[in-house]
Image (cartoon, rainbow, N blue to C red; front, side, top):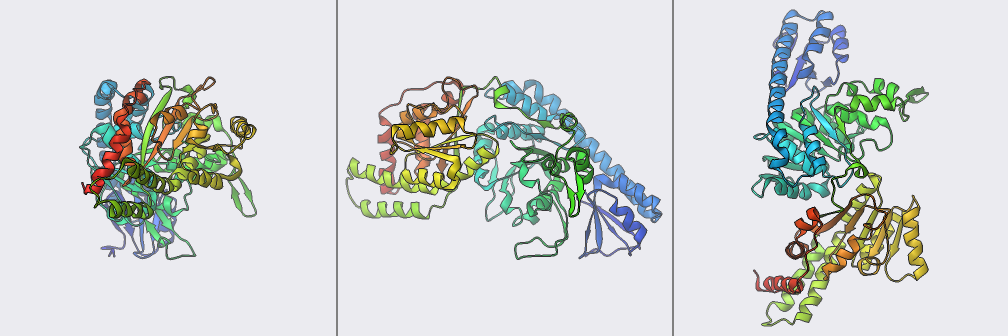
Length: 567
């Protein structure tokens, strides 16, 4: 509880000004004209971001607030300006130090990624930037290297969807080395050089997240905060909650401190900065403190063709889009796959995903209980057990596959999904309904061709679900550039065939292939073995396809035998 030492008390802490005074209608009216101010009904205090101290001092001076309050606010303004100048100097120093040798320091970067990192690191008046590249162009790696180089000693917070946390951890270590200090936040909170938390856990760990400042905040899938009234947006941006109705899961009414308010720099990543209307951009611009993010109504009147109805303002339109594009050119970078000429024809990546392991673990425990006491387990028996584990892992990955496919669709692309197990294909088809076609081997030749034609030519058919063996050969699926493998075949060559379904004559864009790898399952071993046998890195970068040895399956069975031995 803040106890005012005088009729008008001003304090400054952690980038925030706190004002306490007996009610005075003119002073209150002046404060209400300041952007991003909020009132905490519990403490009866007003909260204003410190960087707005000059505006606050000017308005309160006109409102004839006490001179000592104005003096205190001007002192805060000078302090804040000095901090901003020091931060900008650090940004400029990092930019001039890193950018000239960026390509040499990170030789695996593509030229468009070098320019993207340069864009993110560029000093600018606002406190961040938006990277809106198409899916598959490497937004994650660009943000990692930009944040690492711009803040070589600071702490960096990554906020992303739950299904991408492990992928972020993996990409950080791939870009910076296995020694990179990474904390993937779950039930327990641990702060590190790199802290990764999903949007759904922002409330649970809110106190820890806003307790100390962050050098850089990266918001992946930043369009998640586009609705300023959502709890998610409040937890990120901060503000005042004044809801009439509350549930057990609601945020408390009053002042909410946003995670972004505790960050020196912000990088916003999204392939869909506008999902439906220009208004979707407003929250993102507010996050980086762009002038266009100051006043929502003014933004809507100019760029959303807003008009007043009997129920309030309708902001669902669009207007002056050319002007909006020009005004955002310094803070928003978007590259489409078709315009990026430095990509290899095919990019392959393995995405680790957390899955429900209850059923999988039961299959493993049954396997160990039945076979661990045998001196010798026949190869045929081991193969049968591997098949059971693969089946359980594939089923566990269905939610992750659907989530990834939905993200691809949201980015405006079509997607091809391959699986070895019929239950996976059926689940995909059931989820996406009429927008999905399938090829499983049970169809007639004409039905198979109709499915391919619909996917290729019908804009409403956006998902192709196929059995790896049946749909992995003999068809062209150039309408898509995104391929997802839910599970693995015993014959890696089948994957190579299937990967090339969209990479045919007529394909003008690079193809991105994503393999889902369930953490804590046999997938991890299969992925490791495939990397050894296929030379994944060489294939992704150079387009090479090393030949496969016959030892792949033997190596996998050796893993199973070690499991029986308790190794």
